[in-house]
Image (tube, rainbow, N blue to C red; front, top):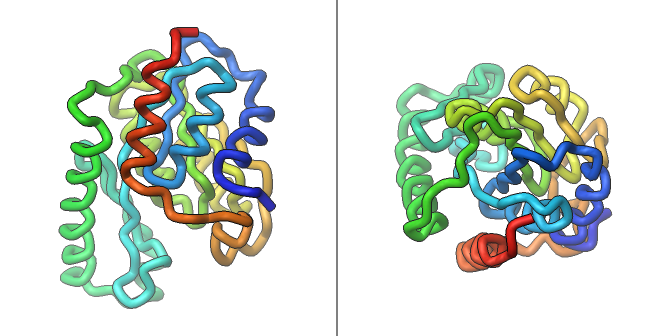
Length: 214
């Protein structure tokens, strides 16, 4: 169990101290991954940024991911979920259109006129508050690769073994603290899993930018 996202970030940071610090960029997945990533970036003396991704939830079971989308047109489709949930092409496209709109809104809001931290030739350490199916994490990896990241590492407090195995196909390494065979909801592993607000995400990014360079 983790007390909250920031405590989870500090515990995760302790497992990442062996990473080479040179050319490292910590990237949080908004919104819940950003408090975790903030603690890791602070502990490692690395810059903090975000990659905006959105889960595509099954229309009648929104927590079940049938895919994910990311910035720059990245699109991940989970064919197994589509087949078992019997989601039509029209329903999938309707969910994707709605999430594309929200993704664009969040990207504009979180960046607040600032430029991305460059990833070209660097190591992108992508952080979330937990990984269920891995669709959004996989989308984030594709975005990071598209921006020229030389190495991509995924880190999360909790993820099931099936997701970890699948994510090794898109990430150079995957680091987790807890790996239960069955994962119902990520929030079950936190005492406090209060939703992270947009303003909190912006606050973490502003605090990170204001830190002296390591």
